[in-house]
Amino acid sequence: MNNTQLITIANDDLRLIDMWAREHAKNTERYYRTDVQEFIAFTQKTIREVTLPDIQEYEDSLMGLKQGSKARKINSVKSLLTFAYETGYTQFNVGKAHKAPKVRSELAQRILTEEQVIIMIARTEKPRDHAMLRLMHHCGLRVSEVVSIQWRDLVERHEGGQVTICGKGEKVRNILIAQDMWNELMRLRPLEYDDDEYVFQSRKGHGRIDESQVNRIVSDAAERAGIKGNVSPHWLRHAHASHSLDRGANINLVRDTLGHASLATTGKYTHVRPNASSSQFLPL
Image (cartoon, rainbow, N blue to C red; front, side, top):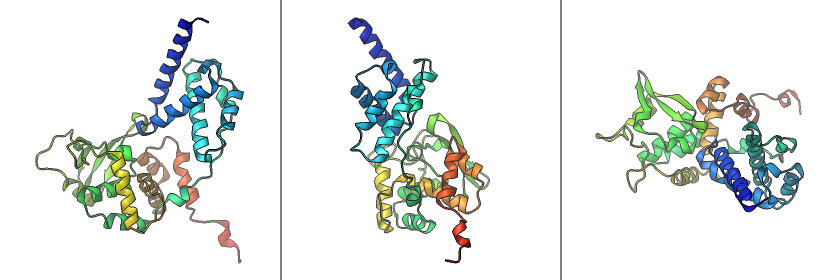
């Protein structure tokens, strides 16, 4: 094979990786790209040349990593190989035969109680931050979604309003907002504004607030509330799912509000916070 052919293959692989990575949320796209690039560097092969032993040997080389990081890297590789097969780039999906490492779920430890969420919000004094924390829990938003909300996305309704969210895979969903939450958002809106302005703006200028800033705001709020652990914005999304299900919300409605692709994803919350167990029937 001459150099021209090698360059063509390399370019084809890069284009495939680019198409595959764009299918993921922007805040995780960078990690996925890094994962597959590390895999390719390890194998020193093109995507079409990858074999099952290559994946197995790569996983063995990750022994020093935490189980969660190892599982993510392997799942990234499997996802790329599945994409390559489904788009006709490869004749076989060699990653399908390899099982990714199992990771112990820590979801139960990441669900805040209603009281904890209330304290987090109550002890946040800045109007922007208070409204943002409350809306993230109120609507179960991802951090990438809350920072992207523009005034055009908010529409008033008879009792409150609704927000249009563009989530993972560019899927759009509309979420109702209660009257009190709506009123708080409207208090943030300037007398003169453009529809394309962001609701939650950076204090440094007129651009939207950065995701890293939201992480700090949530972390600081958790610390003020006396909550231990590395609390992130996603914990408020977990809390929305758990609290709404606990209060009798239909699981299909919760799935649609959160924008889950599968009902099984939403169902995880019913398993980590059960309302009944056989242990309740035992005398000891």
